[in-house]
Image 1 (spheres, rainbow, N blue to C red):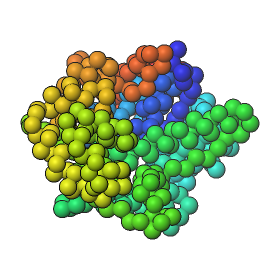
Image 2: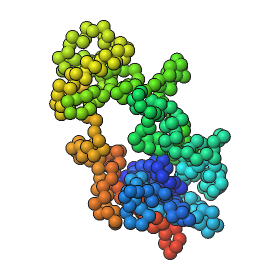
Image 3: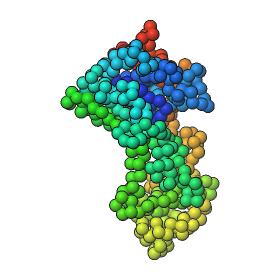
Image 4: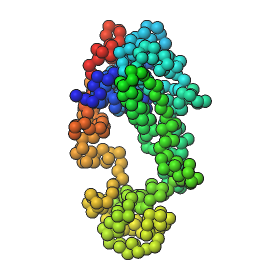
Length: 385
């Protein structure tokens, strides 16, 4: 039995943040009904290339929508509105990731839906939230990385401000959102009362500043990009040049620093006053980088991985291809075969959560509007995906 079997979720979602979050719920066994716009033919991710799976489906869409049902509705029409409410009345939670002012306009907010079901939980994921001057602003992941200071911290100091290579704020916000939803459901089980949960891309992005934000708020320290992808205050924690490529080394403790010197046969550096402790190494990072580059350039990446494996935190810097073809990925089962009607050999990244040592089974997200019976939506109670 999957841990969320019996839980019934209705979601009005598109693109990444909402779908990514609700995918975790679906993979863990919840019945998830994805309400898709009948007028625009569904989630725009269905039309995102360059690789498609027949009409109105894509590899992008499948990457965020495994194990979900699909119902096509126009929530602005009375008939489809009533169909939506019928589903809500048999559900445990309703979530959306629409622009902040849209849930109330579409009457899919908690204030409206609690009249349909006293203990309904509503999760609203938006760009900037629903209770401020930006409630009606559209917004996307990369804008949040820009305004929250993350692009300022990412990349080399000599380069332009740089975003993360993937939509990490969407993924983090979806994850944080369903964490809040599950917590609210637990409270609803105890009290019989529903809850309104609000999460925004902007808030989550700002929260990712972590200790850099805490330093500024308490000490006025403004962190900046550091060369070689280095940690802001700990050294050596950065990239180095091996004989045939790049590696990343993390000496997060004094013990790891001393172990590194032992393995490199550079115990002379233990007595170098520039590198005695973390603070000194951080202040003299450039000089340390020059010394260690010379040492690491003496051998290829494979040598260093073998030399340090299991003792010093170290990793190769891989391309997407090499990352996915890494034998360790196969060993841990992080790529799953998920046969699709249009692509029997479709493979997706596996869900990273294990229960009792087993990864969760994944099936393709249903075709647009597939979950209808004689032109009427299948009820949540009828679903058995």
